Image (tube, rainbow, N blue to C red; front, side, top):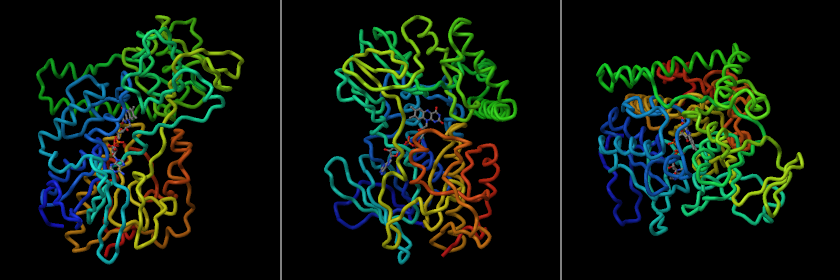
Length: 501
Ligand SMILES: Cc1cc2nc3c(=O)[nH]c(=O)nc-3n(C[C@H](O)[C@H](O)[C@H](O)COP(=O)(O)OP(=O)(O)OC[C@H]3O[C@@H](n4cnc5c(N)ncnc54)[C@H](O)[C@@H]3O)c2cc1C
């Protein structure tokens, strides 16, 4: 793997272009991977193929009003590039940050936009992946070969959100919109809007549009925890006052955020009732003693079983206080011509209904994988620490954290890939395949992730399509940053769980 080809526009010949590494996706993970490769393995040739017309992934495809992060950017930002803005950032701010990373490190020349990968075929004869991509501008098919496939394609379909099938949807005379397909010209001014959902998207959208709508109703089946607070980081602000270097501030604030999160996670498990009380008090402070917090903002599960959204400056609750937004906790019976009939018998009338109801899982980029002539079903594989799969050679998947920032894992996995590539080079091998060891052969297998640990709807709906996990640390996808930050760098690459050839 020692060529130094750059991702120049391809020649017009039909023969495949070759790269040592091929990264799928130019979101925060793919651009991070590209950065680490250039720094840690400058001799490795690579290309990033991205289906969309620009970088950003999530932050490019989501265009609804108010779109912003729900975790802090000191940890969602890369470890190598200081974040200097407020902790909760808009999509536009994140794209600017990523743009700077690309510019400062001259990564743009490695990325090909408008290339949607449709097929990936592994041959054990050549020890290469052959990748087929369809070019958006002319529909032409392009082929690439690569030694190593780095899957940074995220976990959901960018342009195709999940909306449940409700009875009577066809009869509704107004407009039904999913936030992932937000029409640029959607006119909600002076309209009655229902936002269905209780997650971060709904909590972001409601305050962003409430000022312009006649009224917004947040319709949720069940409540979610929120953490309202000021969109600032006191420690960062203090350090700035002391004129500390931004690189230091970034590192110190990351450590503090991660320390506080570890403590919060521990307490959520060990003292869940106390933490629950604190979270509810936070909401009560905004909504006052008369608001029915028990009904609308008290989840039935313990804190942290689902992602908790930060609500900057309590803007969601301010909209409720101002009378511009209402929360309704009920079940949908069916849609009607004028709106939604609830199971309680109440009717909500609307001009626009927004279904902030989640994602459709995208399993490994919806790419048709084949290994030595056989179609690959990922559900037949067992995951190696949530990043590689038994029987699947030379491939890594970046699936970040949910309770901590996604990018923390993307950075950790980047280091792992660079280390693995070096190890293979040192050994003079061309193929690495995670393989169950003799002691693993009879271990019980279960779904990709433990639903007791984490259970968002899109994962539960798609669990049967995902690789399985075993009962030993190597074969689990723990989602535990605080363990993995030490475990991943310490992985023994000569463990028999890796077969080389
Ligand atoms: C509204 C919203 C807010 C979020 N907020 C946070 C947050 O605050 N903190 C946090 O940690 N996480 C957050 N997340 C989760 C977030 O998606 C991840 O943190 C992160 O952005 C994922 O980055 P990624 O690069 O891995 O994947 P993505 O951002 O999904 O990017 C994947 C890229 O791969 C491309 N791709 C996919 N398939 C193919 C293919 N076959 N061929 C070519 N290209 C392909 C896609 O077009 C896309 O550009 C949020 C998610 C959403 C939807």
